[in-house]
Length: 241
Image (cartoon, rainbow, N blue to C red):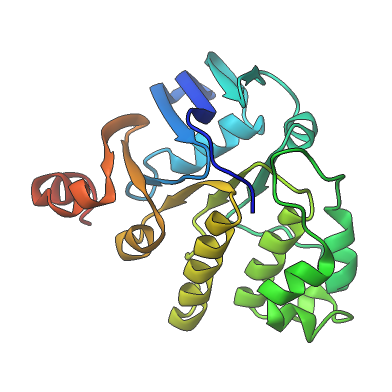
């Protein structure tokens, strides 16, 4: 386990992102502290995924800055951001269907990095025992929940300092959602800093320390999960369907 230290490990300031002429993110800022789990909450289409893609360099911002452990990574290519210590688990998983579980994991391998948990295939199989039982199975022959776990494990093979999880509970059976929550809690115990986007408030409450609510590409609320649980007006305004 790595020790947590005070201060932001990931900081985004005044992000502005467009899709064509559509202004998707406007003046969006957030901070993720070392060893913390922070959730971006909001309805579908609020801008949560665009925030993740902007931070990861998958979508070009027109303005704003992103710092990882104090280093300015604004405008870097996604592979360079990954090598700097950021892991990204997209909502659509993007596993290599024709490759086996072991081959998918090897694709994600990066050297160990200072201050980040170090992962091996055996450590990951301890955390994801279902994957251990299907090491030679092609990923395309796995269930959606198993593919989600594989995607997380493959990302962890990069030994990231910060992990971005986009809608990790989306479309999963309740028992798999519970397993995902336990996984996030275990990763936090390892010292990993995690930013996730979610629509499932119950899931987010189970795993997160703080929340930012995104609405129409802007941060509308920031607070602890306890404070959000006590504020019915905010939940009704921004999170109810």
